[in-house]
Amino acid sequence: MDRWNDGRCRSSPGVRRLVAALLSIVPSFHLSGQRWRPEDRALISDFSYIEAVAVSPFTVFAATTHGLTIYDRQPRTWRLPVTALDGYPAARVRVALADGVGDAVWLGTADGWARYDATVRTWEQGFVPGGVVNLMFDARDPAGGIFVQSAIGWGFLPRGALIPTQDRPLPPPGQRIEPLDPRAALDQAPMADAMRALILTDPRLRSFRFTAAARSPDRSELFLGSDGMGLVRIDPMTGEWSRLTFGLLATRAGAVATAPWGGGGAWVASAGRVGERRGLTWVAADLSADTAIEGAGTLGFPCVEGRRLIASGRSLWLACERGVVRIEAAGSRIKLFELDNPLALAPAPDGVWVGTARGLFVVTTEEKVVPIGPLRQPVLSLVAVRESLWVGTSGDGLGLVVPGTTEVIAPPDVVDQPALRAPIVALALVRDTLVVITPDQFAWRDPATRRWTLQRARAELGRVTALAGDAGGVWIGGTNGLAFWDLPHTTFRTLAVPLDLPSAVRDVAVDRSYVWVATDSGLVRLARDAALR
Image (cartoon, rainbow, N blue to C red; front, side, top):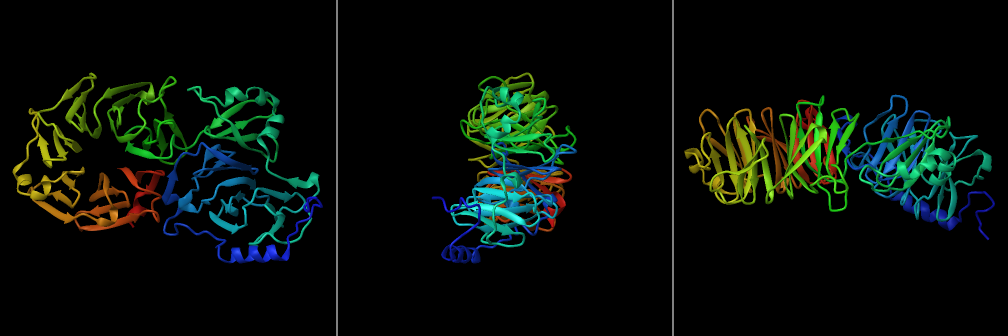
């Protein structure tokens, strides 16, 4: 006989003592990233796999594998996502229920319970042995607390408490506010149920499943989560539906570039794995909208791993494992130029320079691939200076291609610096100042005197992966974090993994307001002024 069938919340004294002991060593309040304001740092990842959904009169909360996304129902816009950088639980979310008295959501996780208050942007959390599998409010007293169901049955958690052990009878069936099962949700919208196959099939004919559901308190809208298509809004009366897309195509962001068009924001190239979604995503500066480019047909976008991305004219150029891809007119035309292991890109007068494992090439606007000179070694980095091109190679170090020639030469000031004959892993310009990164040295060249200033590499950054010029200095991305090198003052401002950034940096781009950082966990948007403080 089930000892919980009498509708009361009970637990033995021994279990209560065990729960109290476990809770005593687990903090209930998660205060993460206190040095950052939420608007100064946001992580955009793949939010398409939704584990739980909750709806209040004004807000939709979608708990995904990589964060909590929040949708405002009235203006129909997305708020800043809440991710691991902001305290999102590491344990898998099993169930969600909107708070009855505030703009907040309760989550049941594999470790216990969590509550996020979207008004003050704070978390409360508590541990429950075996985790929480269900949540419930009493409609007659939603302000009193919440019922939580664990492996040992139902318990009641009063507001402000940590341990769900108080004896309190479950509300009668007609007064229970509980999460909605996707099957039950579709039963309430038969027209949408009839179109389920259409709703859950994307343009590339991939099929998905509904994983979670919630109905608005006024019963005017259903919101269903899926296992790869994100959130779907359904009118239960008419069956009309729309996809509420938000986030990147894949978790890992491989390359990022700002563009002079689009009203501010960044293009992000995924760096996924075979079988994952792939392509480009436009992320608006205010995170109000995103646009994905996945290609056409069943094969979709021709690249899996985006490595470097630049915007030139009205085109995007992407270096990936198969070569270089040119994307025009927001994805209306995608062209792959097959090259062996491209590693670097730079805008050319008639197309784009490409550094590869087998030397230097130009891909022209007339869609020709032209080898440049006799160079037959890996080209690791490039930076264009008007019609000239600085070239960083793995064997000969730093060289220059001047207009009217195809040979990579070493200028006298480079020859006089033996440190610059090492592999050149990154190049950038700060106005007319050239910045060079080798495995052991950071260097910059005074454009007036052509004198070089060298400094030992920063060990705390790990292996350098990216470089982006900014006013007065450069942003240096590495496997262990990101740093701003202030050239005039020879100082560094370092942002470390995992305190400031979630994972290794793959690429960096800068505009007037933001630093955009491609990482293995997604795209991080940093307010530039805050990152420099």
